[in-house]
Image (cartoon, rainbow, N blue to C red; front, side):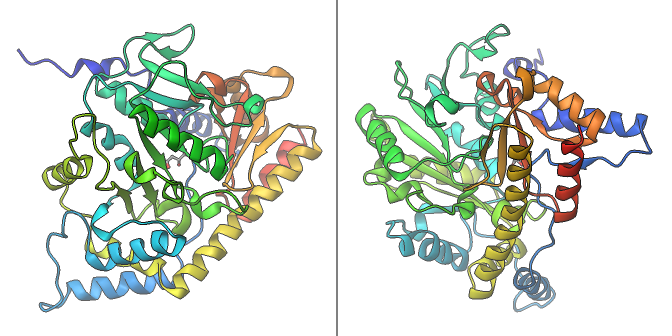
Length: 405
Ligand code: MLT
């Protein structure tokens, strides 16, 4: 008898950003005269930079010539890209990561959703709360999260680690021992970042407890402060307890191009000594035919001197927006966090408003879209996220409208 995967039926509603997109589409349809500005989903708005465009064109030209045409890409990624990543994202920072520990993919979202497949169903996950919804949803799909309690808005088998202003958005060690710990730093959604000392404590904890850290470094290019690590492998002992996921979306604007990578060190083993590197390679080989050559050439352009300079300019363009939003909100009396090492501003809703009520109010009165904090988890209630990924013009206009509320 055909039966759908029952785990999927446990998912709560649609994916957060799909829910928001539907609401915004309905609002626009009902109010065609209004100009809605989105500071909601963390999608970039600035065009790809010249070094990347040049590389894309060259790669397309390669595909037109018999001698340089490429078919299937190597499933773990082209050597030219893995070499550049190993050298510039790791070895230049003193991190000991080899090229064959890097798995190139079609993006950090896929990797952060798929990585749980190499762990047993019985593994217990711990997440920061609020949390990027992919971590929890992908474990719900895998049947690893237990039952949902709509009162507490928590899954019975997930360890939630509240990250609020009270703990400077750094999670405390949980009472129960998790097998898999998701950490995103700089953090989506709070826009805050862990200091190296704090991350080192988590690495030590994971090694002491036999846990693995899945470290999402999608926003590392936005780090501006000293003492904030760009990679978990800057911490001693991380090779035996951490997997790291990277994106090209936020630094180089690849949200529509699609490229990312995951690092699984060879030392990383489960309690029986099974190497996770081999399992992820096996998974990649079976379920993935490699990120396209054209995208990987674009990715390699990011590591050229021109590409690096252009990425710096893009990051500072968006961080200028972060400053604009943050300062304006502060002037209006809002309590705001983030926006220093990440392109997200995390604000406390005024007068204790519920996150979704604030969302509706902002959409209807200012025609500005943000993301309700409660959509990221129970500890996000009473908070709201604005992104810095808009254009300067739209960001300034959104801020002007918010001031007028
Ligand atoms: C977000 O807005 O949280 C991100 O854009 C989602 C993502 O990168 O998948």
